[in-house]
Length: 253
Image (cartoon, rainbow, N blue to C red; front, side):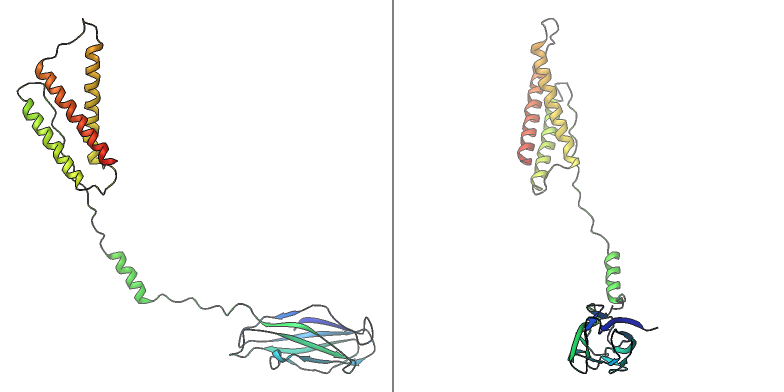
């Protein structure tokens, strides 16, 4: 059954009056499409002829099978809407109803077509692009550059004979750590390999400070004796740890 798009009422308010049930109609079509629809004419007066026509925009696109019907009470007027293959996607115009042998003419807006364009088919994957993506995935990643770990300073001994060798090795490690870190000043923050010597130096510094205060705070009966070699060793370790910590802070700043 053909779809009724508009209901036209004539002779209800007065002689040759024309009323439209819908203010406007839309006929959804794509270029190359065709659709048949009906307009219902309802007559509340005496039987009469009416005339159907379209505006210039819709000429050739909407055709009435009967454009001058004789209406007794109700009459169905069939029409065909089509859009040429190369026609406009959307066309707006008017359908006119003329009654009283030309004495009264009235129209309503018609939108023929769709606002959106014809949906496009999904594009297939391009072989060249797929191969490029595959090559990118198969390329080996560049090896990351890791910093060489700094050698741990040898543990100091309490004997006076090995003091000079221990101090020289500690100073060598300390200088090596400074030269390695100065070549990489662009890297912010200390890595995990550089953090251990810093923690070791900070712990030694705090331990020496604690022993120093402990020596003066203990009662006379509990005080322990310190030889010259031990005092010299503690002084050198204290200066070394303090210098290393200060240099680290200046490097980070």
